[in-house]
Structures are given as C-alpha cells and as structure tokens.
Image (cartoon, rainbow, N blue to C red; front, side, top):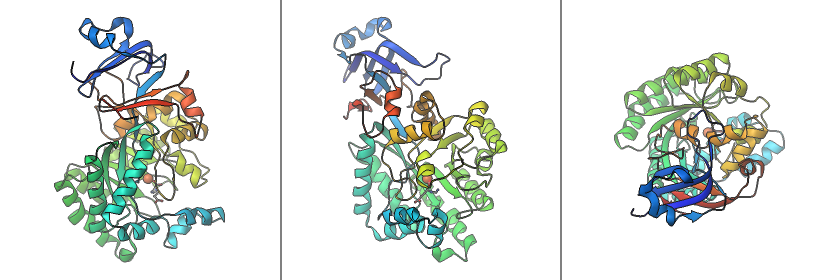
Length: 407
Ligand code: NIG
Ligand code: FE
C-alpha cells in the first residue's frame, strides 16, 4: 500500500463510542495509508491483506496511542499582550472592571486593529506550533478582536492562511464578531448587530471564511435578543453556531444555544438544570474551559454531575487567549478539568478527542477507527493518567497528522 505507516505492540485508546470500558485495546496494531486509518485493533486480528504492513510495522514497546488532540475553542489570532492586566488582577481588579475601563477584550481589539496581517499571521503560527508540540492536530480559532468589519475579515483571512500553511495543525475558523460591543457603537447597539447581520456575516458566508458563528452572551457583552438575531442570520446563511454561555452569570445561554441547535455551548459555570436539559435534548456539546476559570479565580464550577447524568457530551479546550486563558497547553487544560472540575481521566481524554470533534461538527476525526483521518499521538506512558496528572512535562513520543509524522 502506498505511503503506509504501521505501529505494533501498542495500546490504543480508541475513544470510539463503545460500551467496552475504557475503550482500550492492548497488544494492538494501527495501520494507516493515504492519510486514513486502515486498521486499528488487536494485532492477532490484523486482516491478511495487511500482512506486508504488519511485517514492517514499528514496535512501539507498549506505548499508548490516542487520537490526535483537538483544541476546539481558542482565540489564537491577536495583537499585543495583556500581561499588565494580569498584574492588575493580582492587585484585585476583576475581569469585568478591566473591560469597563477599556481593557480586556478592548485592549486586544486596539492592538489587533493596529497590527498588520503579517504580524498577526506570524504570531499565531508560532502559537500553533507550541500547541502542536503538546499533541494537538486540530485547532479551532475564533476572530473577535477586530470588532469592525474590516478587521474581523482580516482575522478570518489570517485563519485561512493558517489553514493553507504546511506543518501546522488543521485550523477550523469561527467568526466571533459578537465578542464585545466596540466603543464606537456604545450608544448604537442595534446598529452594530445590523452591521453583523447585514454586512459581515453574509460576506463571511459567501467567501467561506468561517464554518461557524460564535457570540459572547453576558452582561458585559450581548443580550439573548441580540444573539438570537445573529443566530437567525447565521443559520439562514448555513453557518453553524456556538456560544460563550453563562461564564460570569446565568444568562440562560446554554438553553439559547440548544434552542438554535448549536454545536456547542462553552464555559457554562452558571448554567442551570433547564440549560443542561435543553443541551441534552439538542445534542449540544458542553465545552469546558477550566484555564479561564482558574485565571479569573472563579469559584463556581460548571454543573458537571448534571451534565454527566444528562448524557451531555463534554469537551475540554484551552480557550487560549491573551486575557482570561494565557496558555498554549491542552494537556494543562485536561489537568485542570480533572483537578478543578472533577472530570475523570477518561472524560478528559474524550473531551479533547471525540467530543471536541463533535463540538466542531467534524465527523472524520477524534477516534482511532477504520476510515478516520490518521491523526494520532504516541505517548511514552504506562498509564494514560500520566499524561493528565503531570504538568510541564511532555510524554509525547510522536505525532502523526493526516498520515504524516510531524514530531
Ligand atoms: O472565552 N469570555 C469571553 N471571551 C474569552 C476571553 C477573551 C479575552 O479576554 O480576550 C473567553 O474567556
Ligand atoms: Fe473563549
């Protein structure tokens, strides 16, 4: 078979939907060709057609193989730096106070508007490489620091260049122009929403610059009525939906996202039982962002037990951004999801693989199954818990993206 790669004497965390706990296959072999997984299962059941590949397979000495990690919520394209806000918060200022004083998202907005596209691209590519070194093979990137038509489009064009670049994780682009009300519209809220629905979103859809539209539903951002208008337009344009929901207060964002059939509702610290039930019936993924919870020193955790009981798929992401989640490590987010939110190791792993793929509407990745894209990580660990339990150390032996060994 052309361009075949094979690994044997492996342990597979397939992350596939199966009742077999913990979705692990020991004494396993994985064979990929033409960028797709051709076989993932017990070595003694490898079909005869793969005899040649098996004979040349690399013995990984019992190492664990997982799907390539998927970071399904980031804000990686931005200008400037907000470490000064970090210092202000150490002195007691809150995230909402900093934003009210023109900082927070507005600080990044000014720096992003002032940065040229080349600078934005170079900085984002470098951040993507750092994320990739933690095992990430697919990354979602939101706009949302332009907050005017020209700069929002420019951010999404940077996403497009990142998508086309070699040697970077696969990029999924989301339009988050409804991230905050820009100061020049402070007494014209309706006008800003109309700019999005009448100008920006149609252009984004026509040019294929994003596959989804996101919004920040919060007292410091947009109301449910405003988000509804955005969602109605985005849906009609064939764009998928996501929502920053109930992060700092209960705005009934989870229920709103579910009502529109959104792919995901993200954050969810203040989501109530009705929100959880609505997400469960709509199949909306709960994207947990524990690094933002940690950075902002929040005290209220998302309703994990209820989400679990209702069968809502839970994803875990970095939320990588210069303010509320300055990190470029998805395993760190997994660690915090377990330590701060009480996820199990298996939930954390499904959260950055199968459920993260679902949060992006991607069906071709997130599990080790025949026919899936060959995105995988080989980990030099005895137990998968080691990957999550340690911070600041990488157990990665090798990363394969789209059938190509990248690390
Ligand atoms: O996901 N919650 C709103 N948006 C981002 C923060 C972005 C920022 O602070 O720049 C978040 O935490
Ligand atoms: Fe975010």
